[in-house]
Image (tube, rainbow, N blue to C red; front, side, top):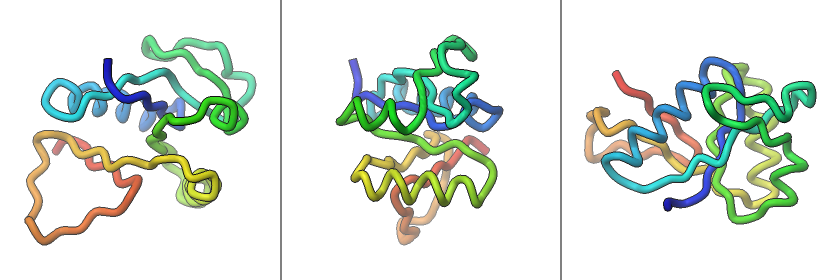
Length: 117
């Protein structure tokens, strides 16, 4: 069993990031994807690509010690979500697909997601 993580976002990017985490787990750091998080309360309880939509930020406040991958395409919404998560001191891990090639001197900040290709 790996480290617990949830994906914040239920759209196409959220589904892609869940697959990215699976790829990372097969070749490196072990993650356990618990489910998806969303601000859309009507989606809570649904299963999307085999992952349960757990809730929103209130779910995170009740379940500590869980990393979050923010997979929201809208830049303004993503900034708002990340600011709230940082204020709550929630881990925003770097997720880097095993196929990514980057220079040794490239710095990547918390919450960065680098997909395959």
